[in-house]
Every structure is written in C-alpha cells, then in structure tokens.
Image (cartoon, rainbow, N blue to C red; front, side, top):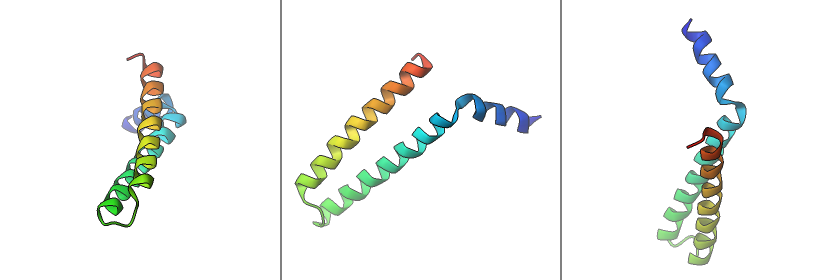
Length: 72
C-alpha cells in the first residue's frame, strides 16, 4: 500500500513541480560555484553580479508560481 500512496503523491505533485525543483537546485549550484570562483579570482565581479541578479529574479518567479499554485 505504501508504494501506491507514494506514487499517488508524486502524480499529485506533478511533473512540473519535480522539474522546477531540479532547476532550482541547479541554479543554486551554479550560483554557489560562481561565488566560489569570484573569491578565487576566476570570475569578474561584473559576471558574478549578472549571475546573481538572474538567480534572484528567476528564484522569485519560481517562488511566486509555487505559492500561487498551492494558495499560500
């Protein structure tokens, strides 16, 4: 029975939510990597700033979409 229930939860959550979760994690990993490279002097501050603005903007959009979908 537990398998049926867990599959139902995944189906209910939807494939789009799973995809958004993966994309969010990848964006965070890219941002952290870029931040480390900034401190090592491998990335210019301008590139880091651009990446940070893109991360914050897209993360805000994802958070708003999830909040709107789940009514929170």
